[in-house]
Image 1 (tube, rainbow, N blue to C red):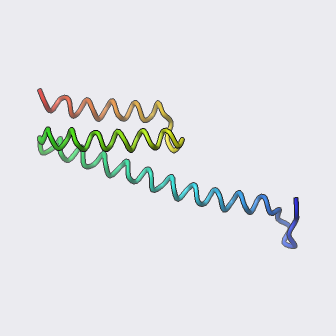
Image 2 (cartoon, helix red, strand yellow):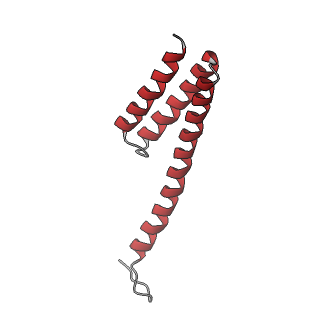
Image 3 (cartoon, helix red, strand yellow):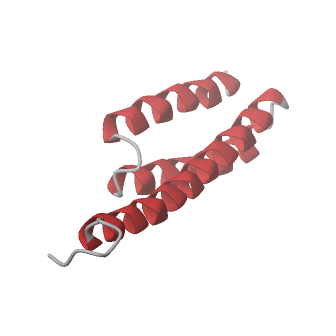
Amino acid sequence: MAKLKTGRHTSALKEARKAEKRTERNAATKSKIRTAVKKVEAAVKNKDTKLAQEQLTIAFSQWDKAAKKNVIHYKAAANQKARLSKKVAGLSK
């Protein structure tokens, strides 16, 4: 393990760079999820069943991808999917 003149190890610097990239990627993924959820909730609020169903599948896909990449816990994704699908199901009654 090489050491720089500043006293920091190169591996620590590399891990910091990697963490920064991961944080950015995770924030983007979570943002996509929030946007998808807002679209579903807007469709539910407007009582548009067809649009809500379409947006729900998109939101499900975003949650599944995030859970697969360990951005969010898979059980947290399942809980959020269940809550949102309950809202959409209540719309069709």
